[in-house]
Image (cartoon, rainbow, N blue to C red):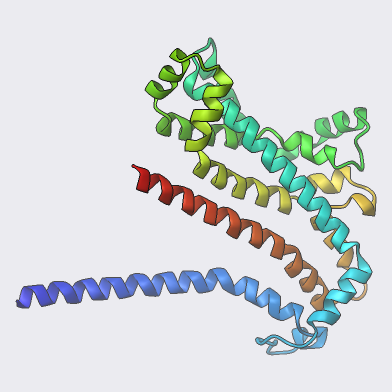
Length: 282
């Protein structure tokens, strides 16, 4: 009896320790977003005071109004949504096709080509700015959202991720049986592979959407007009060289983050639901 009590006590202590660690990690993760919200609801004087304000203020509407009056906020949000959504859908389709081919097809040079794709992940994207800019200029795509969408449609990590997931979750016997029944390669991909790799779709969509939404350097290079700015480039217009309104800057940053949080929560729910459904079926 005493050993059982000791074991239960040890289990309770370890469980409490895990909860404490998780609570600290959750606090550290949420606090920057909370702090950004607090700054977005306070006047510049409250932000610069010592100690600074730790509770939300009453300047949320005023600060956001200043943002809208300074930059084309909603137009930039719309541009970012178009770029992020179209690029993410394209990446999911093209990378899953390539991943399916690498996982289930046998062709000459497959391993060499796959390794070459992986090598590109080690090349800093900044090294490709000049040749990409030359190509975009030749195509006359400057100040056009296609200059951001098209180069992002193929992702080396997406191909690697899909290839690994399909290799481990789509049985070769199921693919062979579908081919014997007369299914084309695309139908095997669409009817057999796609329903199985929905969790992989959700995970890659979260990663790619967040990356495209937060990208600043490449849109800054190819977009020159206010009407074509994405939100990250437009937010640069909130910074004044002489007078810096931190409340306005943090307000724009906070509201630019809200759509990203919503998309993340939606895809995260899809990811969890897909895993749960697969576990129940098996």
